[in-house]
Image (cartoon, rainbow, N blue to C red; front, side, top):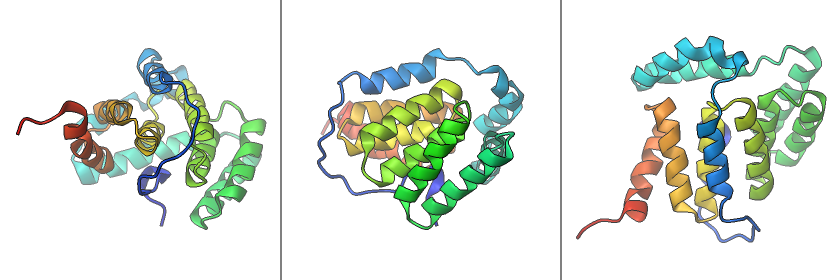
Length: 197
């Protein structure tokens, strides 16, 4: 079964990714600077409920939001999306990249295509490519908590704990009961803010 938001808990490993130091700040500022798009305005009440919901109810509300986001409005886009998701579930991220690439070519304004491909790239260890796709998701859907979680997960993987911590905190402003983000903030707290012994 795929973990929540599609970003597995990989063990930390050193990687070689040529990223500019400001990349984390760029994506975080993208999240903060962009307001909700007109397409997302109908989701406002769900997001308000999400802010105060207890964990079990929050999961249900988050799922309703994700279902809204997954509506492409196109039968062919829906088919490509389902094929990409199926490939991810079957642990075939390379095939998922193919399906999601076809989807982003076909429907570049459908954020879930970019998010699916970001998750597939993450599974392949292609963090720079995943970050590029997450930037697209957040440009289209600034409140996309799955993409924000993915940003945090990638920042952790490339050993940028401050940027990861910031991403998780932004996510918790949208979705305070997000179990994995809460655990990540707790895990990173002493590393980012230090502790007095």
